[in-house]
Image (cartoon, rainbow, N blue to C red):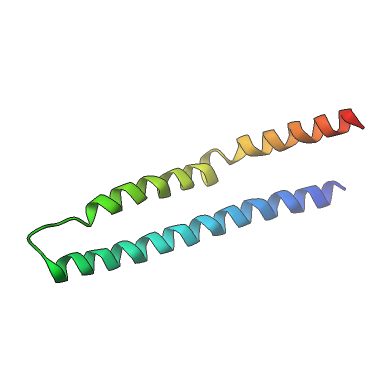
Length: 88
C-alpha cells in the first residue's frame, strides 16, 4: 500500500512540474510573438511589457506553488486521509 501511495504522490509532483514547464513554454512563446508584433507594427510605442509583467506574475506564482509550497498540499492530503480513516 505504501508503495502505491508513494507512486501516486510522485506522479502528482511530476504532473505538477510538467504543467509548470508547459505554462512557462507557452508564456515565452507568446511573449516573443508579442515582441515581434509590437516592433513590427510600431516601435515608437512599446506595450508588450504589460502582458509580459501580468502573465509573468502568474508564472511566478505557478512556480512557487510547484517548487516552494508543494509540501503544504501533501500535508493537506495526509490530513484528509487521516480523517477518512477516522470515519471508517
